[in-house]
Length: 487
Length: 98
Ligand SMILES: [Zn+2]
Image 1 (tube, rainbow over the protein chains, first blue to last red):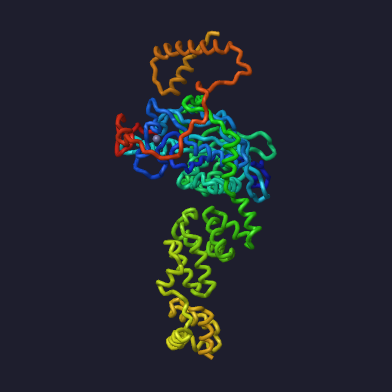
Image 2: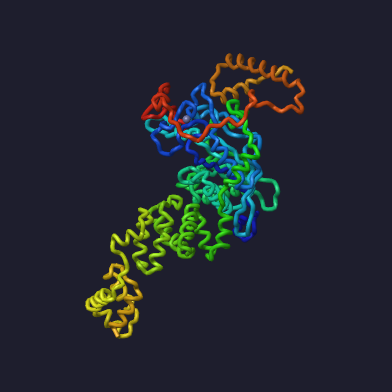
C-alpha cells in the first residue's frame, strides 16, 4: 500500500499496485526446439545454425520431444492442467533477430494452463495463479555497430526452446514478485528443466504493472517492463514504475499502455520503440507442425519421473533428520546441495555435521570462487570420509578445513591425501611437549602475562603451539601440556 | 457483401508486410485483397456449427525428433553463402536501433 502525505499533513489518495509476470525460461535440452543444432551457449557466431533455424525457404521444423516433456513437467509441478490436444501458432513480425519473419509459439491451445504456486509473504502464504505456460522458440542475437551504422546477427540462439510462464496479476509488491520468481526458479531447477540464471538470460522476466486507488476493483492501465536481469533490477524497476504511474495519476494524467525498457544503470525506464509501431502479430495455426496429443500413458510416465521438489524435501528433512529449520532451508536452496547432503549423510549418519560443512565452508568457498551451488562437483563420499577422520581425531579441525578445500576444488580422497601429505594429528606426546616448550621459551612476555593472571594469554600460547605443530595436533592435548608446563 | 479496403487499411497492411507501394500499386493490391475477402465471405456462408476446425491436412499428430545433436553438414559458410553482406561470421543488416 502506498500512502502519500501532503505538506500540511492531509492524507492523500492511497494506491495499490497490481503485478503480473511473463517469465521466459530456456530449457536445458541438448538441441534446439525444431532442428538438431546444439543449444550450447557461447559458440562462435552462427556455428550452431542450420537451414531450419536460419529460416531458409523450404525447410520444415521437427519438434524436439524433450521440449514437450520439460514443458509438461513444469506444468505438473506448478499445478497446471495439461492440454491434451495442443498446437503451435505462428506469430508474425519482421525483425532481423527472427530470420523466418515469424516466431513459432502457442497462442490458442497452450500446453499448460490454470495452475498456481504458493509463496511466502509478510502476511503469510499466498497463491500466485499461473494463467498458462506455452512453448516457443528463442530469437537470434543482434549486436549494433555504432561506427559502421549497421547491426550484426548471430543465429546461435535462434530456435533455442523456451517456455513462457504467464502469471495472473496476483502480486502486489516487489517482495511478492521476488518470492514468486525464487519459487519458480527452484521448481524448474529441481526438475532439471533449466538452470534458470537471470544474469545469463536463461530466465527472463517481463513485468506487467498497473496502479489503482485502494478499494477500486477495476485494474488500471498497465505497462510492460523488459530488460530485467537481476533481482535487484526487478525490485528497483517495480519501485520506479510504481512511482512514475502514481505521479501521472496525481497530476491527473493517464498511464499509456506501452512497453518500457528498464535502464538499471540510470535507474529509469524508457518507452521502447515498438517493432515498427504495429503490435499486430496476425497469429494463425502453424501449418508445418502436426498437433500434439498428450495421451494419459505419456502423462503418467512424466508424472512418475517427477523428482521430489523443494517443498516436499523440506518437509521430509524436518521429519527424517534432527535439523534446525534454517539448515533445511539452506540445504534445499539448490538441488545439488541437497543431493550432496543426502548422499553424505547416508554414508556417515551425521546429518548435522554434514549440514555444517555445507552451510559454512561450502558456502564460503562458493562465494570466494564465485560459483553457483549447482556447479559443485565433489563426491559426497569424500565429505563423509572427512567427517569420520575428524570424529576419529585422526586430523584436527584446522587441518580438516584445509583438506576440505582440496575436496571442494579437486575432489581428492581425504584419507589418502592426509597420509601422503603427513597431515595426521600427532599423537606422540613428546613431540607436542617439545613444541610447547619451544613456544614457552620464545614468548616470555605472554608467559609472564599468564602467570600474572591474564588468562587470555593462554589462547595466544595454544595458537602458537598449534602453529608450530602445523595444525597437526589436538588443541586439547596442547592445552593440557601447556597447563602442566606453566604450573 | 462486396468488401472495401480503404487507403488507410492498405497503408497499414503495407507497414506490416514491410512493403513500400506506390499509390497505383496500393490500389491494385487493394483490389486483389478485396476479391480474396469476397471469397472468404463465400466460405462463411456455410454452416460450420459443430464442425471441428481443421488445422492440419494430414491426420497425424505427435511427430517428434529425439534430442540428439547433429551439426549441419554445410557448416557456417553454407549458411552465410547467400548473405548480401557478412562480417566475422555474422550477417550484416541495417542498424535496428536509433
Ligand atoms: Zn538449426
